[in-house]
Amino acid sequence: MSDLKTIKIAGVEQWREYDFGGRTYRIDQPAEVAFREGGQTHRVTDADGIVHCVPAPGVNGCVVRWMGAVIA
Image 1 (cartoon, rainbow, N blue to C red):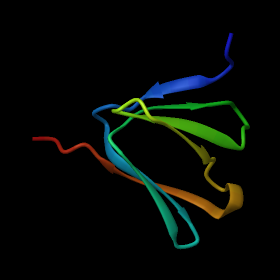
Image 2: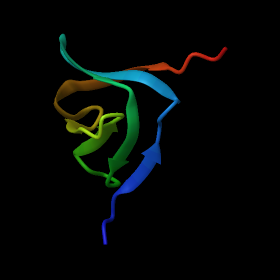
Image 3: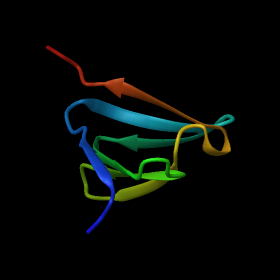
C-alpha cells in the first residue's frame, strides 16, 4: 500500500512550471499530483499519462507556479 497522497487537478490547472533560479520545467495539462507528507519530491501525472518527478517547493530553490483553468 502506498503512503502517497494524491490530488486530482485535471481541469483545474492548464499548466504548471517549476523554476530553479531561472531554469524552468513546464508540464502542460497536469492531471494529478502525488506526494508524501514531508517528502523532498512529488509526482505530477499529465494528461498523456507521463509521470514527472520534481522537487518539492523550496527544495533546491524550487518555486512552483501555475495557470488556472479558463472559466467561460
